[in-house]
Length: 245
Image (cartoon, rainbow, N blue to C red; front, top):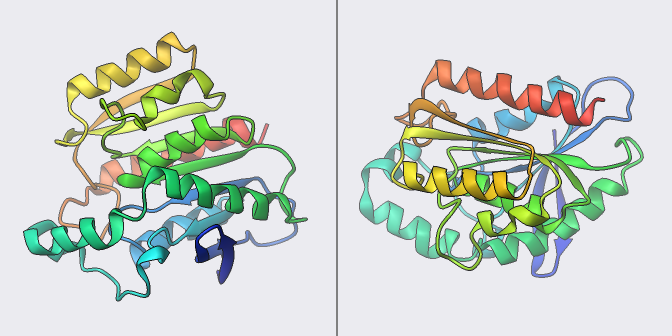
């Protein structure tokens, strides 16, 4: 793993870069982090993707807020004051518009790497990153062949930048996994997203795991090992089918 800096419109974004062992070129995957930020459990996503043969980029989307200490997921889940700080200091600056601006720089960097397979890439995202993964697929449709979202929230709302509004532009194969216990992605929202993707003719799968919001990461109180492994099986199957043809 390398920690590098990529110049964006708004500054220098720290990015964690993972190259598989051996010689390339390799297909590329861009990972959108969850709201608990960069920490060992998040970095493990990049490690496992690279171990499966993917050149992986994992940006720190909270760079606009300045340097920060690693967050304690258990405190954020249990302490309303900690959640308030997270939302006001960090998430408020990592808006979809800002991150899509950043994504242009990430895509440019990936395309310039000689050990990356030419052509479209895959994206995956968690929590807020799930929203960003789908948004990227609709914002850069020619550059993204696969887009996954795991316990993503607010995927089909009345907001003007809701990802479901981009369904008509998406060319990627889409996989969305929601949680059975998730106030940010209830059943009516799942139905709304399903309808938008179906009407747009997007090749997609939308599933609900019997888990709670945030189940993928081992450092959270809602970690669910079987559901986390199911996440890996579905993600790797999606990437295999679209990027390793």
